[in-house]
Length: 217
Ligand SMILES: NC(=O)c1ccc[n+]([C@@H]2O[C@H](COP(=O)([O-])OP(=O)(O)OC[C@H]3O[C@@H](n4cnc5c(N)ncnc54)[C@H](OP(=O)(O)O)[C@@H]3O)[C@@H](O)[C@H]2O)c1
Image (cartoon, rainbow, N blue to C red):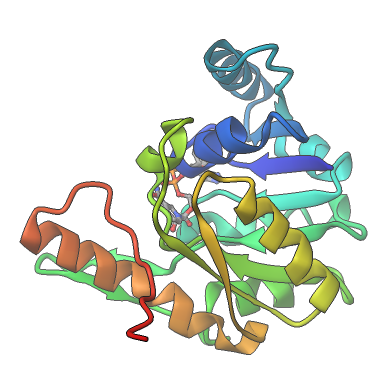
């Protein structure tokens, strides 16, 4: 697949590029094409025969089958509504977490739509498939190409085929277990796990924390 990483010059985008480049054509997007090209070169240095490329966000989206929104929540509007003309029929994946640090702890701050994923859907052309996933995956762990993640990736979405595509992408990341977590309307519950995880990690000094569901049977 051709996968556009919008804002892929940042932490989580770099992690996805490193993990998916072996099987897919990765296009790093940025507000500035030059910055994206530099990031792509840096990622290619980490890979054997890397062919990751970089361009501006709009061009990256327009040439992709799958778009991952790799920007902080406060820039969700600029990479969805403002670039809506670049979207056609791509599958859009949102790992975006609306949260703030209020001086004492990380706090979930969902928009009126209920979640970042539902807000993204409301700003994209009608009929686009949106999947919410990867919110609790640590970018630093993703970037360490050979590291086993030992975590679960919770996936919310409404279209079974789109969910299967994202399940497949998660399975390409060493030891990461994809778990279906409900329709897109349930995304708020998954997004809200990230501030909880960061609060726990910080207070208990857990580096590169993740979440895994255990079975007591
Ligand atoms: N970091 C993690 O461990 C992690 C884990 C799970 C989920 N997430 C989610 O993934 C998303 C990205 O997180 P991140 O840590 O990768 O973010 P980040 O590194 O802080 O930023 C990602 C990119 O956002 C772009 N950006 C910055 N200001 C912008 C603006 N005004 N308009 C448009 N784009 C702008 C920048 O790209 P350009 O300057 O190249 O345009 C930047 O490289 C967030 O929503 C976060 O909640 C992160």
